[in-house]
Amino acid sequence: MTDHVFRRAIPGPVAVGDAVRVTFGELTVAARVVVASANARSIAVEFEAILGGYVGMMPLAWVDDHYEDLVTHTPVRVARADPGAG
Image 1 (spheres, rainbow, N blue to C red):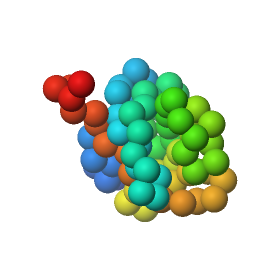
Image 2 (tube, helix red, strand yellow):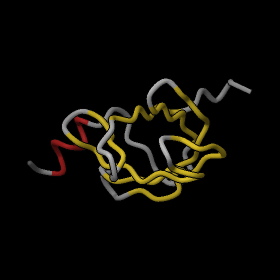
Image 3 (cartoon, rainbow, N blue to C red):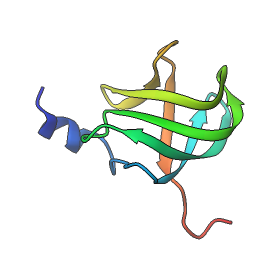
Image 4 (cartoon, rainbow, N blue to C red):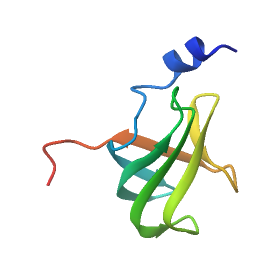
């Protein structure tokens, strides 16, 4: 599969510095993208919480149609943060 296909598959690819909301199980936290590959298939997010056993930072990889954490391969939802949310 080419990068072009992956770019289309990732809804609104994120970049370093982007504010996002990360959902792991039933917990959602505010986070910021601190590392991102050029095509956003691999990212790391930083947050102030314990989320799925991760303390403050979680590495993620794009698999099929969603992000997964790199240790347990649990699906993780990453969405751009609403700029109007306070």
